[in-house]
Image (cartoon, rainbow, N blue to C red; front, side):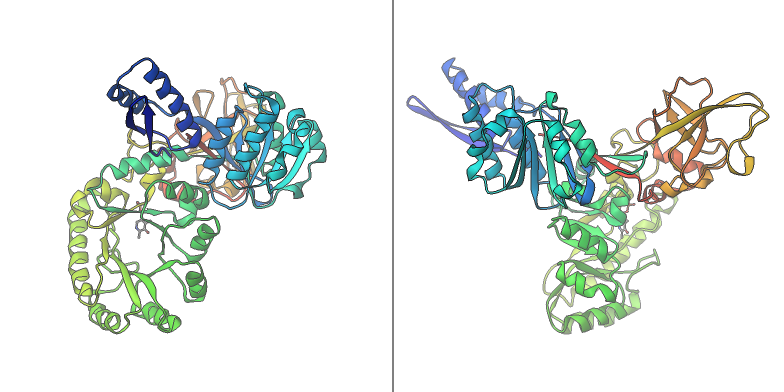
Length: 562
Ligand SMILES: *Cc1c(COP(=O)(O)O)cnc(C)c1O
């Protein structure tokens, strides 16, 4: 989220221009002070510019969490100053949803007088379009009147306890809530009150890692090649609103989802990028149009239905051709008919023509992949004859991007790689782990050799065992296939195996010899236990495990931003 700006400095009889590594007003003001001091010490302008370029952004630790009543919480309870306030509010704009609310404590570490400080805060809240403001602390409460200009719903409380006493679940609904307080105000109590309460298993999603993986794949693209990010199936299980909203800030060209509902959800979250829908059903054509979504048209029948629905109205479409996957797509012998229909229906704009590789991740099928690309080029030449504008041609998925630079064509479609998993399912140090699934120990117990563990009494041992019962089961997406020693967890620096059958809501593991306690966190997969390995234990692929994550698993988003 770093962007640049420039500043023009007049000093004595000279003037100079500088490129600044930031664009938010607080940072620009800080840099202006630095530059002024450097002028005073007669540091030459070229030296100043060189040093400016070296400034590294100071990262802010923010956590984005799902809140009650469909709210999104931005937990910023690490520090509280005026500059940080402005940056956090700016950051909120990159999150899905419209209405911004803030719960703010008094700010302590400031040289400004109370009245002046409150006035500044009020101006910032006004300029950032805050709709609801809760001020907590004696200073904010005493200076209520200063906020009269701020057109927002306002409430003031003398301290955190008093706020919590008056708190009710109806206070916040479908809004983005920034919770920003000085340490002494213990705002973590507010966060915990506002957080969606469910279950001891949490899927942590590192949004910075998503951005870093995006940049890694971008670095593999030739100049001018466009990028479509695949956020189908809730962004492979990670939550499409949050991931798409972050991606939208990082120069992408397209998003793709599988079904219309997924696209509608992204629009509701405020995502404005063009969105392709890969499998649009005729029942959902209305929603498709209302939400400005672009259908993939893959058969003569679907094309006919779409044209019938459009009644001559304009529409952007994507054409999928069959080159070897045998899933969706126009067959070669259907192309002449397609060309005729496109020629007579000029209300259609063919944005892109594409196909999908059947086995880009397997070396022994490289020749087949190349054949598929050749077919796509041949078919698209034919279709292009019916068109007046130039469509984008694309075929590569994540594996293809890494393997076939010559097939990048006009655009590529990035999926699994974005989520930190090497498409050839090998460990790749250049990709950052995005997902960590964590659960907790509900209880510890000792089990003797004559006893058994779990349903079917399949968990046994000839030595005494220390058993930890975890709050995750197959209802959370932890497959029953992990039963009886197949699955392992990472805890206290070691691995521990599943004992007996995985239950619907719980799983028992052997933690004999490990120094663990009840309520300890246990890693299901993540950095120290790769999802790629976990998937191999039950003969599946990471895609399936991710998308099987159960709805009651809470999602927590981590982001460090500037
Ligand atoms: C899912 C999908 C992709 C992305 O595949 P990855 O292997 O996840 O990179 C690309 N194109 C189409 C048509 C897809 O359905």
